[in-house]
Amino acid sequence: MHKDKDKQVVSEGQPISPNDNPYDSYDLERQAEFLERSKVLVPSSMELGSGGVEKYIISKQITKMDEPRNLSKDDLIEKKIIFPDSPDKVTVNKFRGLRTKILERSGNNNFALLITSINEGGGSSFVSMNLAAAFAFDSGKTALLIDCNLGQPTLHSRLDLVPDIGLTDFLNDPNMDIASIIYPTGIPRLRFIPAGTRAEYAGEYFSSFRMKQFLHALRKRYPDRYIIIDAPDFETSPDSRILSELCDYSMLVVPHGQVGETEVATVASSLNKEKLLGVVING
Image (cartoon, rainbow, N blue to C red; front, side):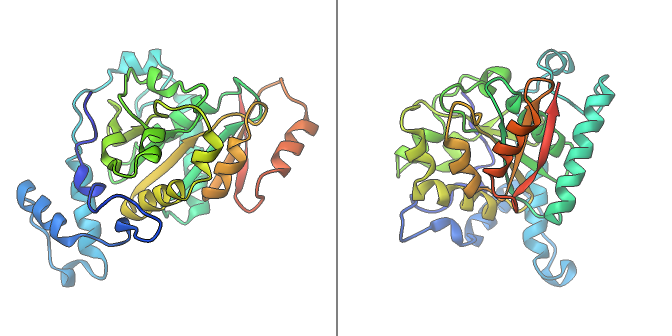
C-alpha cells in the first residue's frame, strides 16, 4: 500500500511526547533538502514579503504531491464523490457553496472540522467525503479527511483502499511517524487517514494528550490544508462530543424527514454553540 509521498511536510522530528512536541518547530534544514531534491528555486524573503518563502515552499509542495493512482470520472460518479466537472452540477454547487461559507467563517485560515450525524446512517460520511473533495478543488489548497468512526469505518472502502495502519495505530505507538498513516486517495490534493486497526476504547484514544498534539501538529504543519473529520453519530456513540472539543468547528448532518425538530435542537444544544457552524439536511 502506497503511503503519502510528501513526507517532508509531516515527518520531521522525534516521536510526540507530553513534554516535547517536535512539530512546533519549522525544520528549515529538511525543507532545504527537499527543495534541492525537487530543484525548486525559492525567491528571497524580500521578494515575497514576511512569511512569503514558507508559503512559496508549501505551494510548490502541493503541486508536487505524488498521486500513485487516480480515480476515473466513472469511479467518482459510481462512488458518489463530486469532482469539478461532474455531471451532477446541483450537488457540486451545494458543496461549493458550503465550502465558501465555511471559509468565510474561518477567515480563510485552516481548521479542523468535525462532521457528525444525529443518528446512525444519517449521512455524515457522505458529507465529509464530498466536502473534503470540494476543498481539494482549489489547486493551491489541500484537504485531509480523517475517519474517526472507529466502530464502523467506511471511508477507506469508498476510496478502494486497504490500509495497513491508521489513526488508532498511531495514537497507540509513540514511535510511529504521522506520514506513515497518511494515504493518497486517487483524488488530487486530497489525503486520507483511516480509522486504524484498533477499535476498542475509542473515547480513551480521542481524549488522550497524543490526540490533541496530533491535531495541533496537522494544523500547524499544513497552513494550506483543511482537516475534515468524519465522526460517529450521536445516537450510538459519545465520541463526537469528545472530538468536538478538539476541533475548531463542528457540523451536524440530519437525514431528511427522519428526525423531528425537537431532537435536532436537543443534539445541537449539546455541542459548543461557538463552534457549531450549522445543520446540513441530507437527502
